[in-house]
Image 1 (spheres, rainbow, N blue to C red):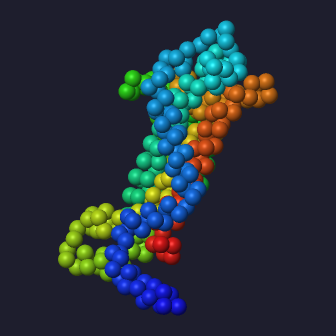
Image 2 (cartoon, helix red, strand yellow):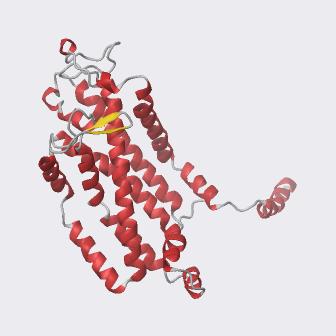
Amino acid sequence: MVETTLSASIHPVDELLTPPLSLRQLVWRRFRRHTMALFGVVVLILLFTYAFGGALFLTESYANQTETGVRLQGPSAVHPFGTDTVGRDILARTIYGGQISLLIGLTAVLIETGFGILIGAFAGYYGGVVDSVLMRITEAMLNIPQLFLLIVMAKFFSGKLPNITLLGRTFSGSVVVIIGIIGLTSWMYLARIVRAEFLSLKENEFVLAARAIGTPRREIIFQHILPNSIAPIVVSATLGVANAILSEAYISFLGLGVQPPTATWGNMLDGAYNYIDTAPWLWVFPGTLIVLTVLSINFLGDGLRDALDPRSRVA
């Protein structure tokens, strides 16, 4: 009984002496309690290590090297993932294909985030005519089917764009087209999210105080309001990477995406649909990598949403 009383009397004092958590510490505490988000982070680290670290051991020329004498061979010690219809090593192609798939996802999201932030910020802050015009443009863009536009533009530019050499790698010109279309047709939802955040924050005391002391509008938008809207932007951008990778996989599976000699996980599936039963290794490995990437990014997005939510009661 005495011990219980002592512990009860000491506990409040300990709480008072404990320093308050910083915002970063609070976010990390919430995030690490999300088991699936931590799983997603670990898997993404492994996938990036596989895609970019694997290039240190296998060259791109080896990934594109054809050897018809060993075509359609199953997994073995020499070719752990087997070979494709022209004898290329699937392990090497998933490494270099992963680089392109991840590059498309990340670059398209940078474009999407840039447009979404700018349009949503200006619409929410200025309001009035500016808001009306920008939101009507946003609504018009929402009516354009992204997948249909991707298919049409990929078909139109197929074979018309020269290959691009960057950092020692050769990319087909279709990579630029796909990145541009995905990025320019995905910013609308983020713009509406940012607009809603700006509408709710621009009347807060810290914004009114900044206006009162003559702070330029650019600083108010980008240095005062935008940092307080970062949570939904980060979550939306995270999930946008998964959507971009899936969009590329859709059209590449239809044969209209990234063209040879550039490999992606999506166009590897395109060459596998005729061998679903006879050579399952052609689609199992790139398909599994796509699934793991998308699931991990979605888990990460869920964890970030919970960790960055200012209304969350979890501490």
